Length: 181
Image 1 (cartoon, rainbow, N blue to C red):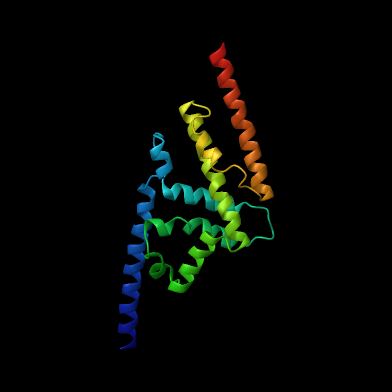
Image 2 (tube, rainbow, N blue to C red):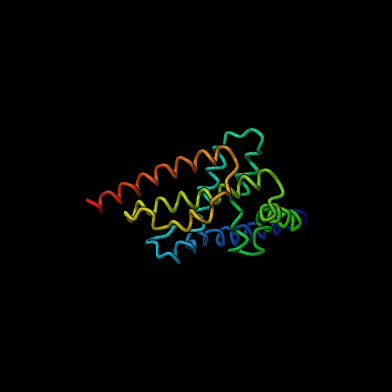
């Protein structure tokens, strides 16, 4: 009897996991709305965004942060918007923990959540810069930069954003001098 019960549980667990993985797979096909609204050609997906944020969290040098927690927050921070309520069963995360994690990110109640929120915004302007480069239209997505002005405080992110802005400003200046010639 016990093995039949275990097999039934195992089958349900596999079905739930497969259902969850299919839902997560849909994130690969959901384009980021901000880019769609700005008519960006072939905009990144929600999954693309979450992946790069997770890599950014993984490479942080800040030893005061729990890197594993940062990576996990980066991987799930947009998931709730896309598949509300379907994260807990497959991840074996109790409902209370799921809500706590989402709330942690939204309320910025930990150093890791604050860091990941800044990663989110940094990744967005890095993506904006890449789209400007791909379209050869420096400065076209300025409003994304404007929306993040003054929001970076983590030293690594401040340094990364500073370098990004230096490169972007050089591209904008070069394009302006070409149009003047």
